[in-house]
Image 1 (spheres, one colour):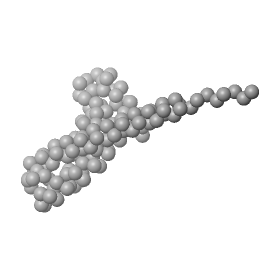
Image 2: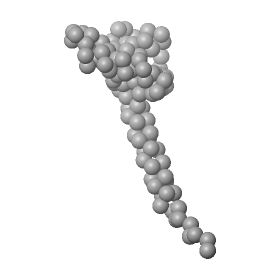
Image 3: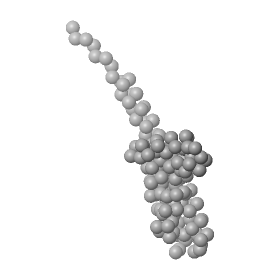
Image 4: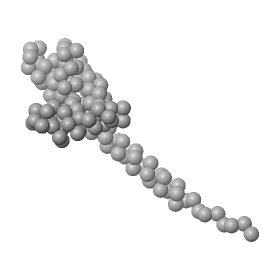
Length: 133
């Protein structure tokens, strides 16, 4: 595979990896399982149990496992055609996916801030009506 194709795959494969990792670790649809995992990672009896359940609460950690799944499904390799290509691709995909998630987090934060500012302006512009005499 040509290097330009490999780079294109890198940036495209990182999109679904970031989407899955973000959805599982942040969105409302997985709130109940995530809360269970948070509880188990704080109250687990063994170190292995606590670390296992932590994996489902951290987008960075979880993105590694999603990346491994995608490497298995696609056979994507970066720069080399042997096992080192998988290794390089794995870390590169995690890096790009986490960059996407960071940008998405900042974008969402900015949207929430803008909505709050608009709501504050709307409430300050509403003047009480003078009573009719």
